[in-house]
Image 1: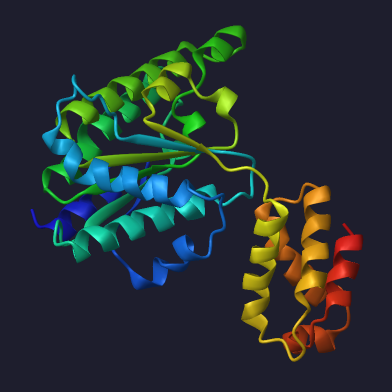
Image 2: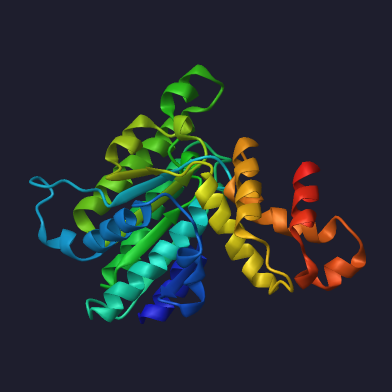
Length: 298
């Protein structure tokens, strides 16, 4: 089966596989370049991805154990999922440029698409995902990056499940995920797993223990919020640029209000639509006063 046919088959055949894409794609570059995160986060993630997708295959799993799993944690709106997409593409660019591979296969898993109506349904679907779908794609030889968005839906904290009304199926499904992650680490060493979560406490401890890298993405600092505002305003080609000192004041106010990264950028949009139609039709006329008024309305 050709690579493209295999990708289409995996996306259509296996529950939970929502998309399969070949990277790099130049249109994905902004998802890496324009996401603002604390110093060192991007370099650590990229280095980990390159290690997992190339050098890890030559290293003993006993001498230097690695599950090829990175987890991005933090509240909603901090850019975790976008950064995961960007990381996959950036790693693909590096591997292609260095002639290590001619592409990277990017797989997106939707945990909510796994069946759970029947006892054992989630367990079987999780096992099929980790023991059939992902290995099938990895077997072709290209590096594979798998996004497990909202990973807590796949590996539910079993201690919390025991205290609630969750069925035994939850325990079995989580165990199937853990077994699958272990199997991939042994048998499919060209696979990188990227998990994201808003609720670290809801992830089973055994999965977090298997993570090689856990990066927390919190709400932006004043410097980060300022950088986001500058980047978003650049889209508007302002007729009168807003002074840096003024933007820094607005950024500091966003931090005082504990505004997340997504909402910092949306402040520009809210400023455009809170007034009359003229501003919405001519975004380049946006001023600092518009931003301040939008912030005051929150």
